[in-house]
Length: 235
Image (cartoon, rainbow, N blue to C red; front, side, top):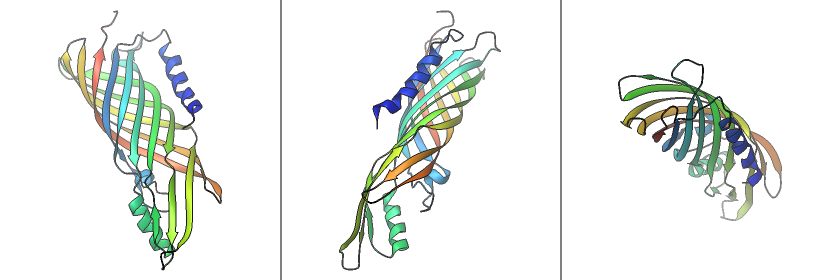
């Protein structure tokens, strides 16, 4: 990945975090299971992403909004995840389509996401709360290059190409919910959460013999656990 592609993520996060209308009181870190859905998971040769279930890490912050109803906060949400590509199924699909045995090397997706937006939490009991959020921001999906080799009926190589992927930063949106359990009041909590993310990224695909542009749908559900560090209001 080109290093300069990371700059917009950090610029967005830092500029929003520095605004004095927020008083950050929660920072969360955790891990999650990343489950592709829709076209991202599809094994259709024309528009499927062949993405498999994977894992990721998450960093969130939550800050109460001054002069707004209690429970309403500014929420920032950043993730990095790994989803392997189902190249075995892709091999089978291409072999059937071409009529020749096709081999495809391993590949994976590595989406990086940063979004911001409102969240709302309300208490269920003294130590349990439920919250929902909706955010929008940017995503960059790095796809690992892979090779495609096609053999004839005598096992002679007909075609061997290495495909490289140069993705572009794209708009993304996310909706989520969580249940938070207080362990030490005003200090530490644990939350179970789930969210849905959607995006459509433009990608330049190139090989030794050709180049083209394509759009990749990135749709996935994440379910995980976060450790929540709480900063008491006014401290």
